[in-house]
Length: 115
Image 1 (cartoon, rainbow, N blue to C red):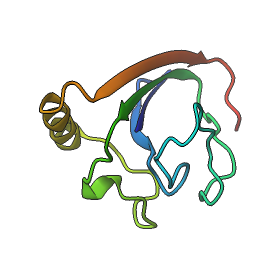
Image 2 (cartoon, rainbow, N blue to C red; image 1 turned 60 degrees about the horizontal axis):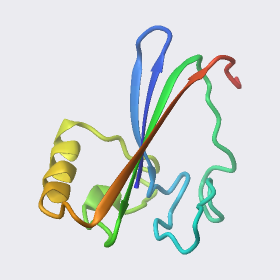
Image 3 (tube, rainbow, N blue to C red; image 1 turned 180 degrees about the horizontal axis):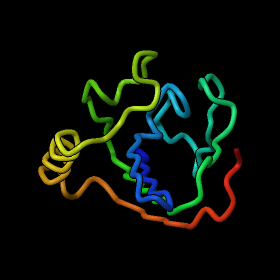
């Protein structure tokens, strides 16, 4: 699972589930040591940053897939938005299975937008 939060220079915040998502990563199973996105079969051909600001990514690697309906890639919500209710559901599941997952965090500044 890969979560993204973007904060532009006007403090507008976006919260997306990048993986799994129909837009970038319909397949969320790690079969190799690295996963490149967008994947083959994804709606998008590239990942771009259209505003200057801060980008944060939280990757959560789990033994088993999560079966939340909002984590099933679909055309209606190609890039799911994570919100407080969805995060609460996720954290409750992770807390109940504390030995079978790892989290990784990365943040960076976008200094030039691609638009």
